Length: 559
Ligand code: ATP
Ligand code: MG
Image (tube, rainbow, N blue to C red; front, side, top):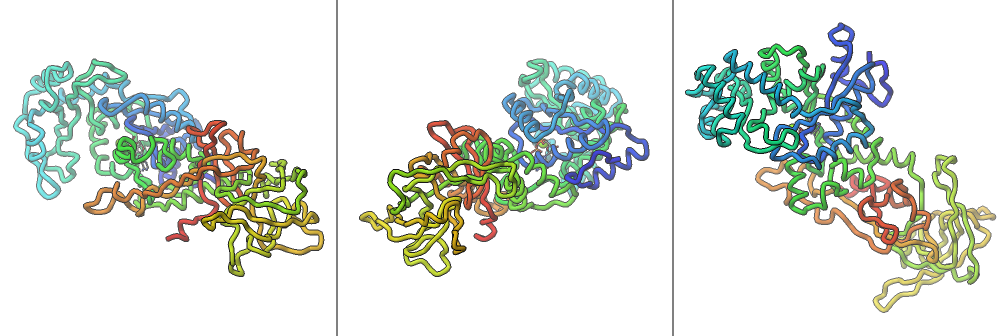
C-alpha cells in the first residue's frame, strides 16, 4: 500500500505496479536506486528520476533507495562529480542513508559472473577489429553474421579473458561478448559486448583492472547484487530489457529486479545531455557547471531555484511512457508559486533616477513601515528610511505620457509604496536630454500611502532613500537558447542557437539597505521579480544579485 503518500505525490503507473507487487506478496520491501554515472553534474532531468526513486522510498513502508555511482568508465569519471552529485541529491531533500554504492565495488563479482558465462558457453572472446565487428553486426533490416571467433573453445576464451584482465593486450584487440543470436531482430541481442579492454587506472580500484564491464552487463548485475526490486530507467533502455533479463536468467542470480521504463524529461529552450553540457562548460559558452542559465541542479540552485519548487515540478509533470517536451514556463510556475508563498518583499530600484521632494524638510528623516509579506502577517514588518532624495525606476517617469500611464509625468500623482502621495512638478535634464532629476511635492497627510480625504491614485511605485540605499549588481537571465528545441534542428549545431542576450548585467542598482544581510534567502523585489544573492560572486563590498524569475510569465507575452 502506498500508505505514506501525500497529496504532493500523485500516483503513476510505476507506483501501481509496486502496489500490485506488494499486494500479491511478490515483494515485502521495495528497493529502488538512482544510478548516475559520475561523468558530469546532475541536471533537472536527473531530478525527475531522483524524485521518482527516492520518492518511492519515502512513501512506502520500509522502502529504501540506493545511490549507486555507475563508475565503469574511468576515462570520463571524476571525484569532483561524485561530490557534486551527492550534494545535489541532498539539496533536493533526499537521503540514501547507508545505501551508498559504486559499481566498482562489484568488479570482482562481475568478473566472476563473466567467467561463469564463458564456462557455460554463453560468452566468448572475440578478436575481430572494431571495423569488422560493425560490419558483422548487420542492421535493422539485415541479420548479423557470426564472428569466426564465436566458436572458440571455452578454454581459449577463459585464457584470453584472464590475460585481457591482466593487461596483456592493447585496447580494441579483444572483446568479451555474450553468445546470444546474431540474427536477433533486436540488435541489442546480437552478441553484445560484456567487457572491453581499457588500460586505464580507476579512481577506486587503481591499476587492478585492464578491462571494464559494459553498461548492459554491469547494470543488471549490480541491481541484482543489491536486491533492487524495481529498476526504473528511461525509455531508451526499453530495447535493452530483453538483454537485462537474459543476463540475469543465465546467471541465475538470487534476485531478478524488474526493469520498468518511463519517459525522460525534456525541457524547451535548453539542452540536457551531459555531452552538450560538457561542451557548453568546456567551450566557455557559460561560466561553469553552476552557471545560473544551465539546467544543472547546481546552476539552478545558484540561480535561486528552491528544492521545493523542483520537487513540485517533478510531481506535476508526473511519470508516463509518453515522450514530450515540457515548457520551461511549467517549471517557472512551480518556482513562482513557491517563492510567492515564502519570499519576503523588498524595494529595489534597478535603473535608478533621482526623485527629489522639494517640499520635504531639508533636515528631516523618518522611518516608515514596510510589510514583509502581503499574505503572511507573521512575517512581520520592517523599517524603511524615508528622506527628501529618493531613487525611483527611470521607467516610472515619462514625459508627455499617454492617459493610461499611471506613473509619474508632470502634474500626475502616484503613491510611493508604504510612504506618501507625490505629484510630479518638473524634471531636470542633462545636455543629452536625459532626465537626471524628477522633482515632486508630497502630501504630508498621506503618510503610509493612505490619503485622509479618500482621494485615490491609480499607480504605486517603488523607491529607495538615496541616502540609505546600497548599490548592487543585478544579473537578469533569459533563456539560454533562441529556439525551443535547439538540439533537434537538422544539420545545425545547437550552439548556433545560443541566445547572445541570455544575461543582462545591471550595475549600480539601488537596494533597500535591509538587503545587505539576507544570506541565501530569496526576496521578491516588488514589481520586478524574485532575486537572491549570487552565492559565488556576491561579497559584502560588492553585492551581486541574480534574478531567479520574473513575477509573471513575460516570455509567453513576448512570443
Ligand atoms: P545524459 O543522457 O544526460 O547524458 P545519462 O542518462 O547518461 O544522462 P546517467 O548519469 O546515466 O546520465 O543518469 C542517471 C539516471 O538519471 C539514469 O537512471 C537516467 O535514466 C536518469 N536520467 C538521466 N536523464 C534523464 C532525464 N532527462 N529524464 C529523466 N531521467 C533521466
Ligand atoms: Mg547513462
